[in-house]
Amino acid sequence: MRLVELEIARHDWGGMLCGCGGSAQHLARDLLRLADGDPGQEPGHVDLEEHVWSAAVLWEPAPAVASVALAALADDVPPAARERYLDLLQCLVAGEGTDGESARRGLDLPELCRGLARQGLWLLYGEVMSNRFPGTVGAAFEILTVVEPDRARLQRVREVAADWLPVCCRTGLCDEDLPGLDR
Ligand SMILES: [Zn+2]
Ligand SMILES: [Zn+2]
Image 1 (cartoon, rainbow, N blue to C red):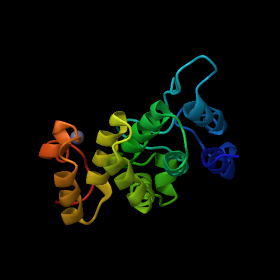
Image 2 (image 1 turned 45 degrees about the vertical axis):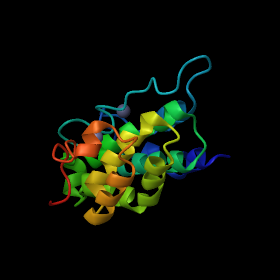
Image 3 (image 1 turned 90 degrees about the horizontal axis):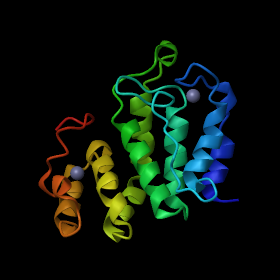
Image 4 (image 1 turned 180 degrees about the horizontal axis):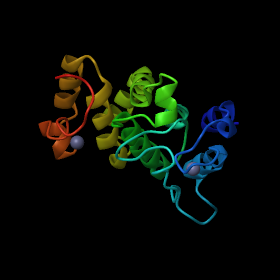
């Protein structure tokens, strides 16, 4: 069993309320499809907007999904799947609010997701520095601009990786657009 499958299997999806109003059980299947794709299809024809995240809020499954995305990064999933998982993680760390039900239970879902991404700091730096997959470098760096408390370290990597970072990351243009740490 691969790391990403192991992490998907670890969570009680059926016990969580999805943004679509139903049980989050379907996310287990969606996240697997995101890792592999259907046969003959590219991975990632799965849109979790309005299920896990939206422009306004994150829903209960968001932290579990963030964990799965980090497990996928540590795993040997195809480049297109890494890209999809990183995009998903970026939507989660950029989250601004928590759905009403979770908020009543005292949860701050965006902050939980940022905390998880912070635990995966070196995975994200590894993705940036290895420059193995051009499509993932920008997303990994932009997640770091939100969650990295050590701004000097981030700045150092920005300089060292300047040759292959997208121009928005190199110039710091994308930092301002993302909520998160005080700067
Ligand atoms: Zn749903
Ligand atoms: Zn950027």
